[in-house]
Image (cartoon, rainbow, N blue to C red; front, side):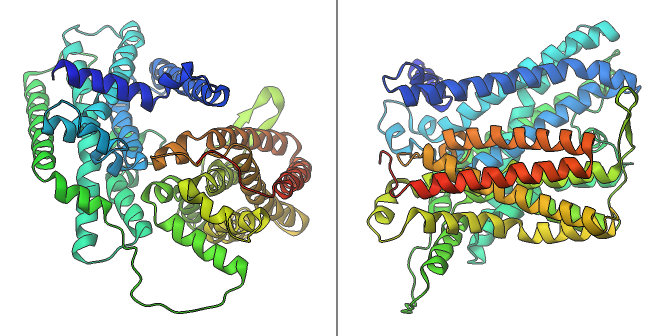
Length: 514
């Protein structure tokens, strides 16, 4: 890579992580960039802390030899899924596509700059995590220093596997649906994510249930690196590394040669309706239909918000049918507390209901077309109801299934059953209305990349922090006070809903820079 290419990547990374906005004259933009940077730093520190603590944790379980295979596999799955959630289209095309192709760089570099930028980010993350991990491992069990060479190989190879795997799966699914002339963002998102994680699901299904077993079972690193590596293992690793390099290079070559058809494949949207039917619909029904259509037209929006509704439904149905394993009770003797299997699964229900919501970015997602809504005789209240209903409808099947699980699996009856179901419902309503109120307070209509709105918007970040606080508060109260604690949380959530509703009603016009 030449000097111009390196400078371009440096500038793109500064913009991607919003470091360039830290010196912006606009206070709001500067504050958002600061919060985003702090969020990245906190996440990075937590990841490093988790990696460094793993040898101690797994040594307690007599699994010290599984630490490296586990972390290498975990990095692959996390980075691969993150690439899919970020949108493969953003890696192939990017938000600055038109500007890049007028720069004084080679054409193949312009086509691959997004892939190279993503690889550099993941390479740095893998390097810091894997090399930091070896320090506590060496204290527990000294190993030959030449094994650091294998660590270096996996630092280079893991991002190649994550990016290459997600690209291949996404391209295959996209091409398959294109051949069938079937265009459904929802089906595409489910198929893409489902196919990608299918080895991980199989890995968990073929071994006794353990939080780390499935990840270890799908690891590309077959040895512990805590002892002398045999010659045949060296050969296997080198051959795997060479194969990954060849396949990834071939993928990049194919992308460079077939760039225009690929960008067309990812950019095609059917916007023409061949059949026109004049209908008169109630305002709310028309707005809800519009929200559903807009939601399912965005792959990034769908894949980043559909996981928890599906997870809630699958887990609840699995519990009702007796297909899911029981957790070992966690006993805290000093506090005289016991976390049962039922309690832990109910916490999972709450996490699924409140961790993600479509409403935290639903107004911002209007983008530069918000002027259309601003010019229509539609109130913000009506828009809010439609956007809130979309989020509720997504979770409705899971909410019903969770209610059945509370009765059939958890054995809740009478008042206990009623208050827990109300708790599930108020949690969903609370995060939905809170997301709407926060998004109206911090809208962002001037964006060029959907990912910026869905995952990096100010309202999304604030709502995510609020949801984590709600989850923690709910778990603590229900753990210490039982049904009384659940009732207290319900009352608090109802108050939050009332306050959020009042704030929404105060806003008569969508304001923000376009």
